[in-house]
Each structure stands twice: as C-alpha cells, then as structure tokens.
Image (cartoon, rainbow, N blue to C red; front, side, top):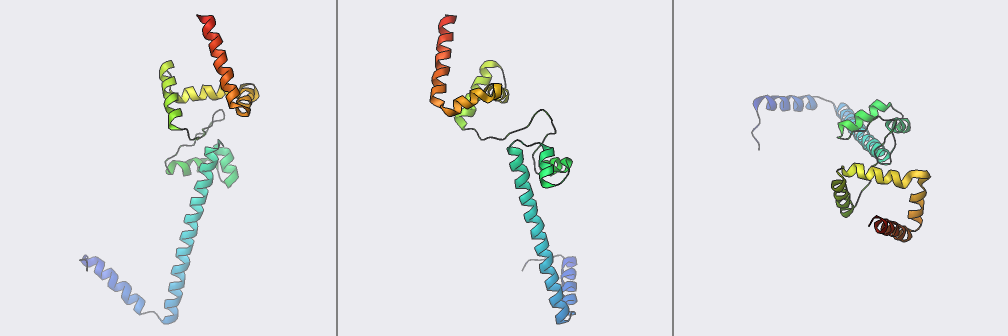
Length: 167
C-alpha cells in the first residue's frame, strides 16, 4: 500500500466514519445523488463536445462567428472565446472567412514552389487562384468542374500560344 501523508489519512478516516454513521436509507440517498451528479457532469461533457464539433464544422465550412452564434443560440463573442480556449482563432471579419480544406501534400508543395517563384506566401497564392476561379460568378470554376481534362487542355493551349507570341 502506498504511504500517504498523515493529513490525507485523517481525511480518509473522517469520510469513512461519516459514511458509517449514515443510516441505510441515507446511504442509498447519498449514492443516488452521487450517481445523478456524475450523470449531469457526463451530460455537460457530451454537450460541450457536440457544441465544439458543430462550431468547428461550421467554421471549417466558412461560416462567420455571427452565423455560428446564431445557429447555436449564443453570442458571437462566446463562440470566439469557446474556440480560443481550445486553441483556434475565429476572426470577426465581415470581408473574410477562413475555410479549412485539406490539400494533398503534393498540392501544398506546388503552392509553396509557386509562391517562392513569385515572392508570395502559399496562402496568398491560393487566395489569388481561388479568386480567379470564382470570378464572373464562378464561370471558370464551373467549366473546370464539368470537364477537368478539357480545362487542362485549354490552359495548356493558352500558355503555348502565349509562349509562342512572346518568343
């Protein structure tokens, strides 16, 4: 058995004596209250996890702090604080949103190389590419999604023509 400090042994003995002094009905009531308290704690923990999942899923989908707050029925400041306590920053911006999108490692490396070649951060490169694809009500993006191979060929032809005229 582990050696425990004297003060802890006194507390443990006092608790044991207090429980021994209870009648069987009081003991049953205490146990029921203890189980109910544990169930409440577990329910709060599960609710907190579900709230976190919803907040971060909405944030990843590009929703603003105000939209997230409206969806979970709380203040936008509370949403930002909730995320901040868990290591995430949800900005309060009317003009910009963050959209968390997984990118293949090869794509990320290509973005970095492109950024290095133009003296830009890879995030800025990605933002400009997305802005180009979404310009004119996303006409370019829609065409590329309908037929990616045709889009690749058109881009290749455009750069071949540009390369020939520049030479």
